Amino acid sequence: MLNENFVYVGLVIGVWGGISYIIDTVKGKIQPNKVSYFLWATASLIGFAAQLSKGVGVQSLLTFSVGFIPLLVFISSFVNKDANWKITRFDLLCGTLSFGGLILWGVTREGDIAIFFSILADALACLPTLIKSYKYPETESGWAYLAGSISAGITIFTLTTWNFTYVGYPVYLLIANFLVYSFIQFRPRDLFSKLSH
Image 1 (cartoon, rainbow, N blue to C red):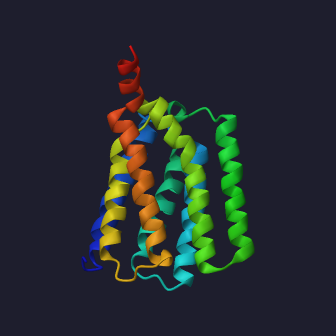
Image 2 (image 1 turned 45 degrees about the vertical axis):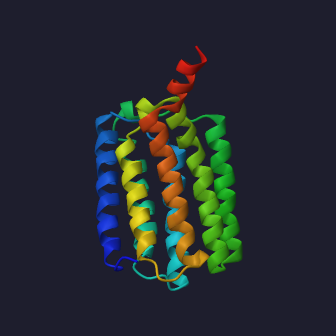
């Protein structure tokens, strides 16, 4: 296991990726899905509060950062009209289901259940961006998601307590970020299209 201070290294990498994403959004180079980013901010900040209530230490900073950075991305997506992404019914459906997960968290108020519903809400919020990354990878920036995966991976290796409260969110973030990164970087849709011809 890594010393828990390595969480700060992961945090810097994740924030670096997030800041580059915000800059690309403001410049209009990429088009973030507003539904995903708004709900990622909400779900992660709730997850952060739940982790704090369960006594998770410095590792909870990962969850805070993956809530605060998306909040900044969401705000920055209104700065440049070229950063707009058309919101579809599917986005709204995922957003509604994600919001339902947040309501369930509010009803339960139990730490592990809150973390579970926060992860569920986050995953539902991720679906529109995952599909957008698969269909239109040019509208995204892979570095931010790779940085998120690295940050989550470092956090996982600093853990000394292996239960859902500590491991759930970082493992989910590692998987979700790496999936989005893979769709942007490796463009499987293009590959499948070439193979089918």
